[in-house]
Image (tube, one colour):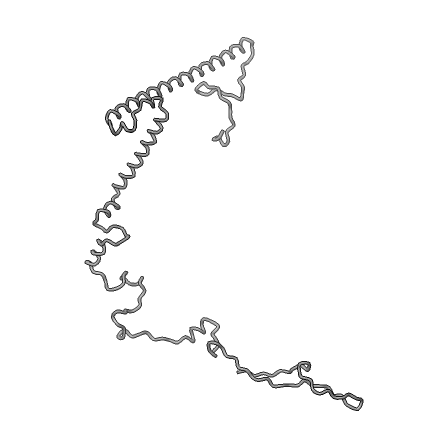
Length: 249
């Protein structure tokens, strides 16, 4: 409860009757009128007690509550103990061995198959997963090799049709093996021809170089090779390329 008073300025007060002013009237200075103002009380919305400003004040003013005696605690509501400090990991009474075995082999909806079932054995068998994985990888490798073989061989017209593998599997397989042997023989022949051609080119370059050296000796000059080129171990004349860090050209 607080009370206070203040002075009101003159220009805020109501004017009284106008008095005649004359030389006979003495003028006295007007003093500000002090009017008492009704006292007002300030009420807090919560309580009249001021709120503590610090955590220590809050803890000091907090009411101390006593623990509930265990003799008045019903059996269905045990003492509140943190779950991490207890060995009980489920609500309710402790599970027996029969309950654990029943829960371990019970089939729950939208969950993995229980132990002892066929699906549990199938999902946890590493040999089956390894066999399936290797089978898929081998199948993809064979399919990639077959597509590459069909696209590169010149005997594509001699290969059996896809339907023949189902109608006549043995004859189609033997026919495919014969075509593959022909393809390998043709590939070996092409490779040997390319190798002989390279050898002939190397020999021609070697003879040309020896001829230039002989002509220079007949003229009494020294044969100088172009520094921009070099002759490799295979006899091929190549252009010198600058290497960056000895790796890139």
